[in-house]
Length: 314
Image 1: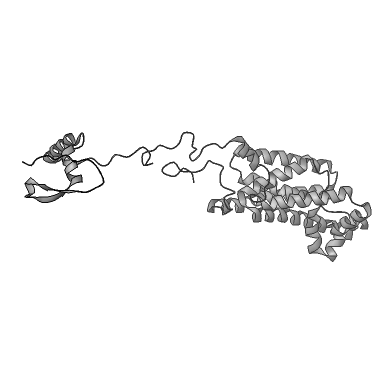
Image 2: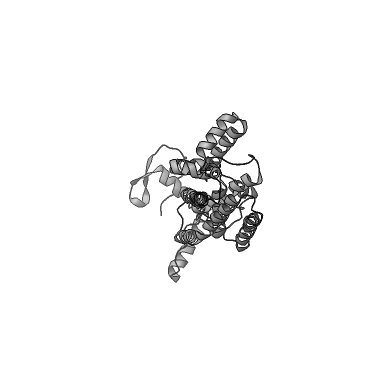
């Protein structure tokens, strides 16, 4: 048995002979550790480890610290999949944004500019612009491509009306479901189809003597054909059945009531044709939705952020 030698604890290393080692040098730090004895609880742990080795029980793994993040629960109040977003998120998605709905946003700004021009511009200049952009029989025979698209840049009516609010809500909702290019295609298809169908009928009626020759230069412009086609298309891609048939019933009733009164037969029949075209596009738009739309995430259902393992939101 050797003699326990206490040395003062310091960073200086001194060598002293150890009797058990036959005078072999030993550091003072090691001797100090021997002198102080094992740390508290070391004997108990050593005895428990020995019993565990004897019984064949596996040693316990390292304890997870509370700040390691391994066993930390997700923070309280974090939203997972399917959580209902706050109301202001829903309200924001009802209106167009430059990144979310670029077609509707840019088109709405264009209509605001042209409507202000019609309202506050020089009447002679405004009349000349509308006459040159009108998609009537006379202009269609001379510049068909130009007037077919230019006639959709002007709006008949007040800037703030029920129809303009419907335009914004319908096109925004449709673009968030099928994307900007497809929304533009539906709008243009409804506008072109209804315009050509009605104006070709007017041309035939003038040729047959059923209408006066002045009908060939009648002003024909506006966004109503395109908006009705988009409203009918929107009814086919919404997931709520009651909303679908509410759209069809409400807009269909308005279109049919105008046909009964026949205030403007050419425009009223154009409304019906545009609305029917939007319904005819349902199979194509639904097939696109089943394949999975790549709209940059704008057509995905509204939900909270996904929670990664460990509580971090994606």
